[in-house]
Amino acid sequence: MTTIHQRLYRERLTSANMAVTMIPSGAKVAMPLAAGQPPAILAALAERARAGAVENVRLYYLLCTGVAGTSVFDFELRDLIVPMSYFHGGVERALDKRRLAEALPAVDLVPCHFSQVPRSMVEHVGVDTLIATVSPMDADGNFSLGASTDYALTVSRKPGLRLILEVNSNMPYVRGDCMIPVSSVAALVENDVSLPVLPAAARNEVDDAIGAIIADLVEDGDCLQMGIGALPDAVCSGLSRHRHLGIHTEMMTPGLARLVAAGVVDNSRKQIHAGRSIFTFALGDQALYDFLNNNPAVEAYPVDYVNNPFIIAQNDRVVSVNATLQIDLNGACNSEFVNGRQFSASGGQVDFVRGAYASRGGRSIIACHSTAAKGTLSRIVPALTGPVTTSRNDTHIVVTEYGWANLKGKSVAERARALIGLAHPDFRGELDLAARGAGLC
Image 1 (tube, rainbow, N blue to C red):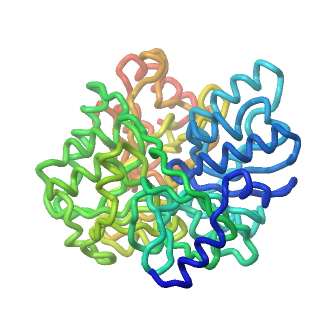
Image 2: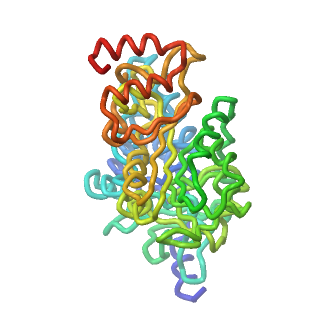
Image 3: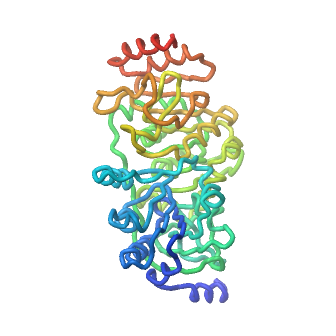
């Protein structure tokens, strides 16, 4: 580490309380998703708002954790720090429940594909500040964004941006295009705390049945993208006997990391980034963060690269696995609305649906349980009750515990019959009547 880098570090090092004085009222602040959200800075910003020193701060982000939920997104601060979500989670759903009880509008959402979030923040929103957690500075004077490169790297390079970083020795040092030089930083805060962890989703026999079906659709040498939750975890569990798999995924998960450690993934048959597992953010357990730290076989890149369908398609035989909430009889998917309200968002689903299908020999898989609400509702429906996340033109392979269907090349009548065959038997009769009433078959 050179003397100039050390000098710049010392000059920019300050307390969280001092760092947030750089954020004025009316600021448009971006923060990374999940593990990249800086707890000391967020707590200090919340206290500054409570003290009446700042207001009308709009915070742009995906996938908020409890770190932000218990600080800046305290319900009492709602008029001072405004959440501008690109992807809802448990924090936003809890806030919406409270807001609904008090006849207030729901947490606002910016609809956007994950790959387009950097451009949205920089060009359309015009964010002026980035706050983020990073790893300690390396010998070249750079901080790694570690588990949360996502949109943060691209935003960090916006000319004139106010950049405030929280240095945490527990953030894994990850290689790739994920570095921020100390020379571009306005303020540094040191705070060594544990990163947020995502407990493994509880799996049941339906998850395992779907996982086994999907695992059978994966061939040796395929390149994987997995989403979040019990279904992708079940798929990973079913791949233990595969060989020479690759990884090009938006989210690095514990399940994927275990496949690398077991030798199932070696990335030897990829056309780009051969020998490397590529991701844009990671969220999981401590073992996952330990796996990422200083690992030459893993690299992080910004989401406008990783999720770019053109980049995805440069690898052959990409297999994309994502979950949905509803599928209509035409094959369109609602992956973000429940009971008429925003539940999550589109995230990177469409990015990988399109990128995987454009890949030579690639397959895009959308999976779901056949029912919801303890078996009282069918997830295969005559018409969606929320927005179209993945259009019928894009949907490729659909999987439930009752099997799988390739919708490509099928007419609307053929699709309806195939999807009814994937529905729970208790609902097939009424779905058949609905399809006939709509003239689908």
